[in-house]
Amino acid sequence: MTPRSTAQNAELALLLEVTGTPKPGNVDRERDFGDLRFEHFLAGAVGARPGLELAVEGQRVGRAFERAVAGMAEQSAGNTQFGALLVLSPLVAAASEGDLTPESADSVVRATTVADAADFYRAFEHVDVAVDDPPDGLEPLDVRRGSDAIPTLEEQELTLFDVMARSADVDGVAAEWVGEFGRVFDAGARILDDEGPVPDRASRVFVELLAEEVDTFVVTRNDRETAEEVKRRAQAVLDGEEDATELAEEFVARDVNPGTTADLVAGGLFVALERGLVV
Image 1 (cartoon, one colour):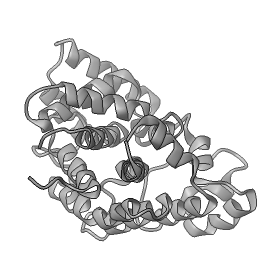
Image 2 (cartoon, helix red, strand yellow):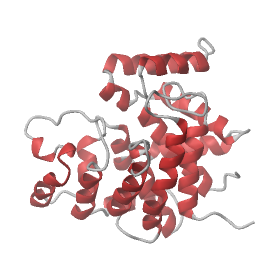
Image 3 (cartoon, one colour):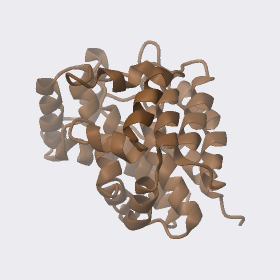
Image 4 (cartoon, helix red, strand yellow):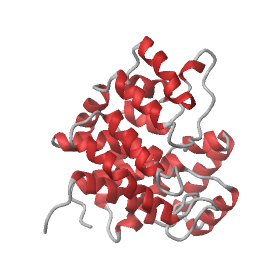
């Protein structure tokens, strides 16, 4: 049996993530949003792979991420896995250099440069991403400015790690960047320790993560109160007080989308695959 490459494992992680069901509030193999369907995520994963391969080849993490987002965005639905690719790009780079560990991933993100930060901002020109307005005084660094923000990045000598650090208190993916990808590696360990079909394992870990911390994407798209409700009701599923499938239908109907949690599960699946998960 020929082993998969690191880039193939990253693509497979994206595919496995979206096949897990039920994942309350997210697109999965049994439920779609009106303008975002299951097959769009499959196409996005395939489109992103050439960018992920750049990370394997040792190109800059920012460059690999921007190219992965561009490839994803060339599919018909546009933005399907922006956050997941931001998780995966440094993990792929770390895995390609040797053992994939929290320490090796941390070394990769801390070695990012101003050029990586510029690539990150360019990625926003490919897709529409739901983000909060920047704090007062930081308007020149609003990610929605895309390439127009690059002179400010260069003037302030901000690396991509610096940019993530500035958002870590309000963005769950940025928090992983500055926290050695703690929740991602934990999710990977849980997936490995679980049994049964991998999409079912991914679904279970999704609900567990959802019950543990507020999903920052829900805070951004909806509000803090809704995000707290999502966390509370995910715990109710774990306690046997609510049905995960019924909750999934309700959240989709209400347009409540815990996308950050899905991004972490995608990263966890990649970690598990790199550590020997059999698929």
